[in-house]
Amino acid sequence: MTILVTGAAGFIGSNFVLDWFEQNDEHIVSLDKLTYAGNLENLQPLENNENHIFVRGDIADEKLITSILNEYQPRAIINFAAESHVDRSIHGPKDFITTNIVGTYTLLEMVRNYWYNLDGQPKKKFKFLHVSTDEVYGSLDSNDPPFSETNAYAPSSPYSASKAASDHLIRAWHETYGLPVITTNCSNNYGPYHFPEKLIPLCILNALNGELLPIYGDGLQVRDWLYVKDHCTAIRLVLEEARIGETYNIGGRNEKANIDVVRALCSILDELQPKKDGSKYATQITYVKDRPGHDKRYAIDATKLESELGWMPQETFESGIRKTVEWYLSHQDWVSRVQSGEYQRWIDKQYQ
Ligand code: NAD
Ligand code: DAU
Image 1: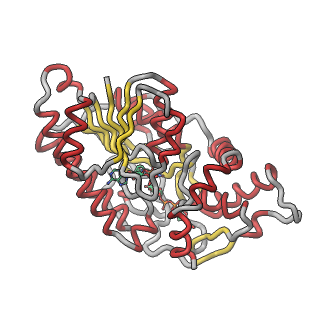
Image 2 (image 1 turned 180 degrees about the horizontal axis):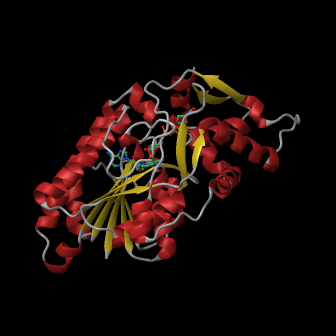
Image 3 (image 1 turned 120 degrees about the vertical axis):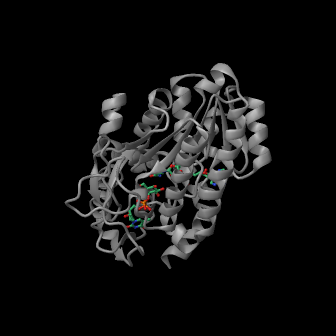
């Protein structure tokens, strides 16, 4: 048996594939275009694993997708592939439309054709799991109840609008063609291999390099943080046990204001790697221009996943954030290789 995982060299995709092989040895074919965010080094621990195959390619490449499906006959597909960074989508939405919408559409069409031609048990058991985000629901006020699966979509950024569009396509391919799909909408992940354009890894690395820690606006925007391994566990569970055609919200019940997240990082760094001059990392915090269309608050009601499938996150924010800081401190080689690439050019464009 084989599953096809797209976007497998990115942050969550690589954590998922590594976690998968810690649990079982069912084959994975990893597909990734290796954009600036895809890093094959993340999958290096699997270099000698015969059950893992990596293919470089685009989910929008019809021929490639068809040949992968025909050759490896996957029993399921998990689609992580996407452009994922909100700020990049504001500077240049085109790649987001191309991958998140057209790419998902192409993948759906190729998979529909493959699934249609399957027979018996493989056809009956086939599943397409689409990994999406809580950002499709838009922004909450401080007293609003958390997002549930029945909230209307109200995306604010080109990124979230493109993900919302992809979710609609997934739903339509189920309703219209009967394709067996499941969608998950997860909150903010953090943990190992997180690309340092996103708040948590950016601030850890800036802190260590003696640079400023940029907080957009007043820093009071709230996100619900989930340790990436807990997201991976949820996806495995959803893949095996969730009801076809359903959507499931995934979140850590860890609502934090951005400024508090950065302060927490600073105090762990103060403890684990105190600054030589005796000053505190928090002195590097600086308030910068706000993100246009910045969503004020995300919060997830994960009751459906918890009650139907018995999922519970293992990490608290405190334990997960400490593990994350420790990971970055002990993976300086990974960090310096990432920082020597495209990442640097992006940082210049965004923060100068
Ligand atoms: P990421 O940017 O780290 O990784 C995305 C991966 O997709 C990269 O390896 C990239 O090379 C690959 N990719 C991009 N375009 C591709 C294409 N056309 N064909 C094939 N591969 C392509 O993103 P991530 O944070 O790992 O997010 C993975 C998925 O989870 C995304 O769909 C994202 O919307 C969703 N998600 C992310 C979070 C989060 O907090 N990071 C939360 C909820 C949902
Ligand atoms: O909610 C799920 C989403 O979480 C995913 O769908 C996205 O793919 C993922 O990137 C993430 O989106 P965010 O925009 O919430 O993540 P980011 O790390 O970019 O920002 C987190 C918060 O921190 C957000 O309110 C913006 C703020 N921020 C971010 C950066 C990069 C800052 O204040 N300063 C910064 O430099």
